Length: 286
Image (cartoon, rainbow, N blue to C red; front, top):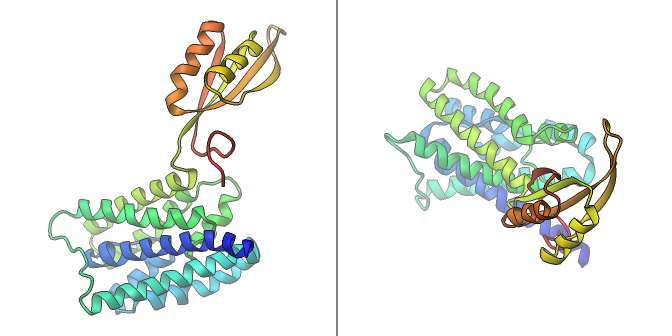
């Protein structure tokens, strides 16, 4: 039962993400003759050129990539990929039926395509970001992006590169103006993907090089109630022994921590890094 609950906690967000993504395609992209990248982009082109249904074409084009993903990502990863891809096709089919029966009226702009591009980018990026964050993909370039992300590449940047190539080819079927608006969609979507992947909570990581490490650590623990790690250090030029105080705090606590350090050691060297996701006591648990 516990294992089933854990799987549902991953599967349900993937279903939500694919539903948002399918809605963005059918509600904003297709009615305004915009484009999408990856395998879905190819399916969109075939829809424009031959009228093939997006739901069926997307699934068929992804089947060869399942084999690639099965080897590279493993059975457990591919389970969520298959769930993501199949659910995307099902939600696309659902949207097609809702539109066909008049129960969903797509948003079609006659003059403000920038508004369409922004909303399309937000919905597509939000949907894909949720899917990726919970270990799934929607197939196609998403599979390749997840494989390359294991080598340190940003998934958003990988998708942006592949999408740019496919969208360039789409100029055969759609106008240059629509291609330029599509690039706005892809850019916004890639930023949303990385934002959701990294986490919506932003914290600050402090590294303080000082001669008063213990005193600073005690003050942080007492005043901010944050955990602190002390690490020994040695100056490469001076050869002097120092300490590095490492601490992660919420963004709102940044000024207080800097004040604590400056009051104890005005000569301390402080490095502050932005942290997009923090797991552990005092922050959040997953």
